Image (cartoon, rainbow, N blue to C red; front, top):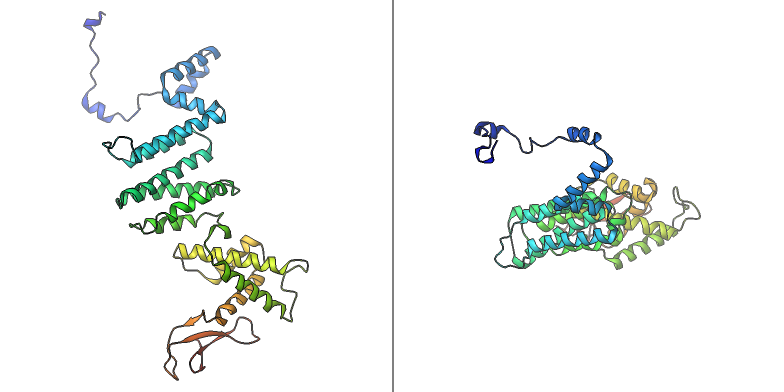
Length: 343
């Protein structure tokens, strides 16, 4: 038929609406069956043609078979693309955070190196934090997008069997939380909650009063040395008491930091089990060590008790240790030393 006489077939409008996206394309099953019938040379030719025709295929094959330096170069290109969305060179460019997210998702499809994928996702979060620090309060959808990407980073890190990726990125993971202090929409609090969901968080990754902890540990050591029931329960004679106390108190500080960041209530059992899982010490030993820590707090008036003294009316009520009794305490008035029964 002469070209001039050929007319493209018309597809009824209703039929076009019914057609799903990519419905006319070959399915994986059909493609697989076709490829099985092709020769090795034909498949190679098909791959080469695809490589030439599609930039996406070219990137995919390069990342799959290229050396690490080449993959890192492509990774840097994608970092640059993300940066250009948040901070474009053209001041007239319209900002669309969804475009930056598409870039990250596209890289996730191309790259099988999970470390690079996690790093690009974290870079997206860092650019989001820098953007709001630069331009001020944005909107809820913006913060939701950055938060969900940070959550994806945390979930990916938690899937690993060792803390290697967290060790490399831990300063950056903490920095985005610190840098959002004071930002609205619950942005800072939500990032902080997710940060403390990282299972690899340890004592080095939290903010603690080291001088206070040293005093607590020394107080516990001195108290335990005075006990008549040594050795301690389930403790090897050759085990260092200082090391044991250090590990238990540090791990407890991590637990308390997690609970505080997540605004979570908890029981003593939750606390003991967390420390036991991290340190492998027995619940009985952990309970005894934390009781000594509690005694330090009672001794230093850190355990206030709400209410008023029935004798003098003072509200300065404190919890005090019952001498020579483990896990027993009483309430007394600091002004007149009247003892009360706990309600």
